[in-house]
Length: 208
Picture 1 (cartoon, rainbow, N blue to C red):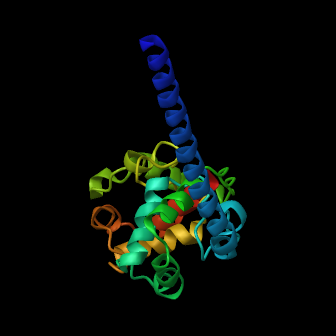
Picture 2: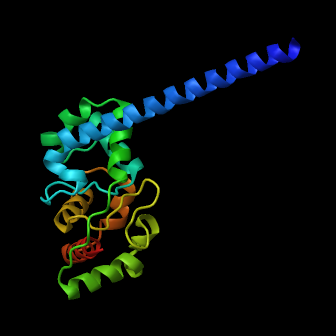
Picture 3: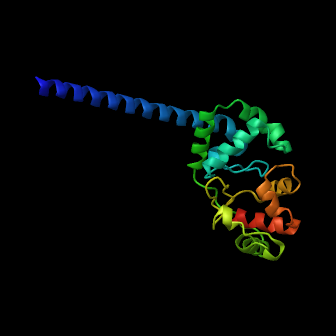
């Protein structure tokens, strides 16, 4: 009888574990679906199908680092990104998202195929490549690869820049230089870059 009781108890525990696991799986799928639905039906208006925008006014999100997407949506929610586009577009949109939806949107976009690189002027791209890989050490500008990866693919919560619109990259660096977008670490790195250097780096990462 003890063996039979132990058998039924073990079976009940196994069934309970299976049911709980199935419920957790279903919950995870539902959350991912909610993020995908929001991304497709709301975000794609500006960021394009599957996160590849056609307008350089809006960043490409496909293959972006998920932690970076989460951090930026939270910044929009808290209104700590103050550039005009944030006011005009993202404050209202991000303000209506809960934490789980933000995470699922980030997971959706990070899993999408990356945008292909678009070549620019070869001479400008070559200058940008050198700046990206070696920096300007005599002016205290470190290489971009330190945080953004060897191919600008992003590292941890540092964003992917590869394939991003050059115009968008230039504008964000200019915002950071002018303290419109608050990013203290980046400000220290880019504050002394010339407009020509900014344009070259932007052209290079777009080409990747």
